[in-house]
Amino acid sequence: MKRNIVVYGLYGLAALLMICAAGFALGALHAVLEQLYGKVQASLIIAGGLVIAGLLIFAIAAFISSRRRPAPPLAATALAAAPIAASLLTSRKKWSAALVGGVVILGAILGRQLFKGDGGPDGES
Image (cartoon, rainbow, N blue to C red):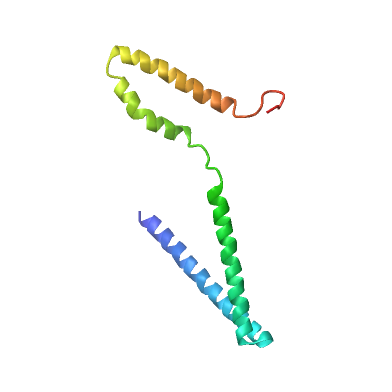
């Protein structure tokens, strides 16, 4: 636990230092642009660059959020089905039903893993 706190503290310190460095870099860029174009134009150039960077980051976030999410891992599916399986295992008749259901689920899992959209031996899909 202490190790995690130290690691996250160091991450936070590194992020703070990078933010400070970006601020200094923007200040230096503003000083150079101020000598070339004047105060107002330099401020407008910096503001325009920040707006464009913000819009670009917003577009990237929108693109990432619109992508299809991957299927959950099979372990999560098995954990979700665990309470149902526990209720089935209370009598001998239910044991056989659970065994048949387990074989069906195992077959589905193996079939999904073995034939994961490869299109067959000829490579057709």
